[in-house]
Length: 338
Length: 201
Image (cartoon, rainbow over all chains, first blue to last red; front, top):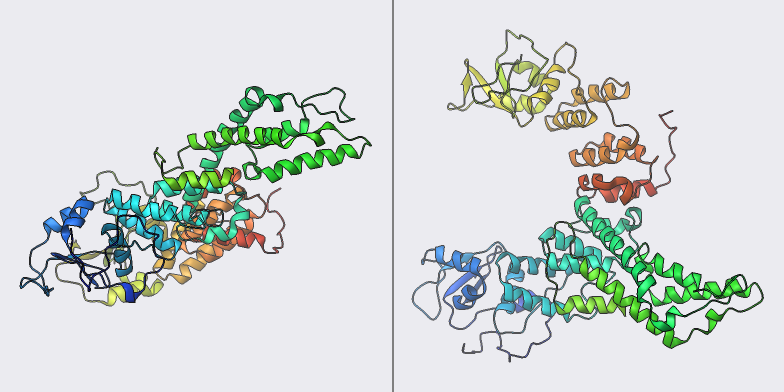
């Protein structure tokens, strides 16, 4: 157990706290008790820390520490011998934030999307797997969610730039909810990390999802409809026979091409348009009486199909196959599909 | 003017230009190690960059070939062949594609060869040098943008106005857009541009 003194950051209980949001110069003091190494940022800030934590969490830094000389110009206030110095290319703010996820202190996430992605990239560079998980956990607890429609393109391009495959896939999934045309993107094309290659990869990902969804929803239409939905009949005056509602059939089949319109409101709009059109011909069709229970059953079943199909498409170009199991992914998916 | 490749390169590119310059006093070497014997004064006259470079004293340990100093450049022999041909009163070696013409223009830009660059642009206008046509506008814009060739960007952007800019139509070409190029092109296309008359039948 590392002792706590008044000059150090407070040691917190094991329960995971909510991360703080801002790293300021005033809070950068990080002298952990029992330091035996100095991590020096590119802007010359010294972090005196016990190297045990560092070598346990990072095989890359373990090798770096092993390779450096034991001589240094940084005096240790407690010991007569100077501490070895490891010079790192990261800024003091980034290192500080990283160390809050290494040591048992209140974790601090940087304040901007770019810096958060930069922090993840640093943890990935130093192969700090459990720290990455810790950071991702803190990100997943953000409210509003870190990756949401307004931030999805930004996060996606940064994730591609930093080769953060998990975040790239998560963000790519959220972009499925948005219409995507080159000329419609415009402002998103200014985001840092945006390149034609990354955008092309995102487009190919959308294409793969579309292709899989086409067969997925067709199978759903033919074999997967809940019984109450399967037996729906449209009695519109213009319909010769009592048949499965054409507007509902069209809606199901359109999902693959217009996934960004996969939304309960859009569904109700389609139904309302149909009823309005039929009312024009004097009689009301039976689609006006579809019960909430039937609509709910239909929507839940369709959602499962869409969800499952998207989950299966796990490649976004430069990204290899990866297992997505983080809380954040499920949360994002739930948000979208809810 | 062109010299056989050095012993390091046994498979030289095939070059058409072979001009004997008896008073050559410097060797320009391409990235693929083809030596071009030229006159310093010609280089200096057409390029402030070379004028400054050649005014510096030559380090004593610099390589000499037949007693001539060697300037190593990053352009390949094909490009230097064209570039050097444009410095002399001979028929220019005209690149075979607009991409190579763009590379030539970029080299002129890099070496401050303003007048040579103007001559090439004049040649493009009258059709002596190849230029992008029809649906090549998108990739031409991406290349010109990556090389910082502003007039060529404008011309290419105009060409794109005849075509839709979609993921489907661009396909793999999209990958060649770097930095702000894509964003700038989208914004250009959204401006109220007056579509010039189509140059194609």
